[in-house]
Image (cartoon, rainbow, N blue to C red; front, side):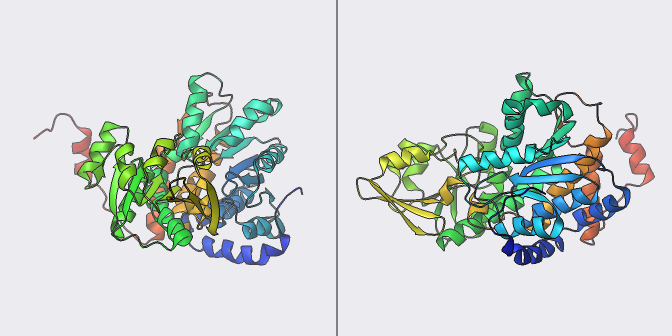
Length: 418
């Protein structure tokens, strides 16, 4: 078995943490038990480029239980939990290529190592695996039956590939499942972003002027949590409908140029490039803290910041202080990468339970539908989404109402009216 991790000796600690996460992932556990019996992925090779965390470890265990041969690499250089990578290799026999803090060269070497298994299914978080396959490993494409994408940024990239006619196989947008983006993006990102910021800074959120860039599901989640901790929240949005929603949700709404002047903490959650850039750095107050919780580190224009600053100093883990020519200090967290993973542990396991249930059932769906899907980006089938919601409610001991036959008849009729 090929692999690359930081230290195999970390495996015992990683195994305990994987098992702890598993105890909070009942839906995925139920799927794994069924997969163990039915082996729906028998003979399937899965190449995955995901955050190497305890939750991802339990997804890999589930795929293997279903009969799949799996290989995993990191979708972000700072998201790998080295003890988890070691345990997956030593305790579960899964090929992992991931080292926390790996440079760009090693990052892409690891992606290519995962592709070396000649996958039937790709599992991506940001579309770097798919784009590498399309750009430099095209000899493998004929073997691929389909793929799945975990995050908003990746779905955007893949839809662009589809619209440009270059997408070579079907992709299921796991991110767009209601049991994913309503919960993972809103509650998971909301809580874990606050967690990463506080661990990195020991900041008191109460009374801080927090500027949230983007009011999608991730932005909504973080804004809600920041306000809950006493922050004064301003939203920066380019979409008039979302900006109006933010206003009606009780937040201040302002353009970035104005918000730059008064913010204490700036957090990007947009999926776009250069959201915070030179003109913002010029106007920020002394001591302003800047973080990103979007997928890639391009949301903050770090080259601009590096060029403008007279000096930089690492003050504590995941915190670099830049001194500007006028003496102001600007604080960058987690190298501009996902602060919830760079500074903390990512989403709680109970949220990722639903996200990775979608991934595992999507792999089963792609296997069953081999040859029947077009080279397009698809939504997760509604039947999978509803099944996951039902399993999650069952695991929580929650019962819901059922329609009576009379109610079903009324909803199906156009004649009954008032």
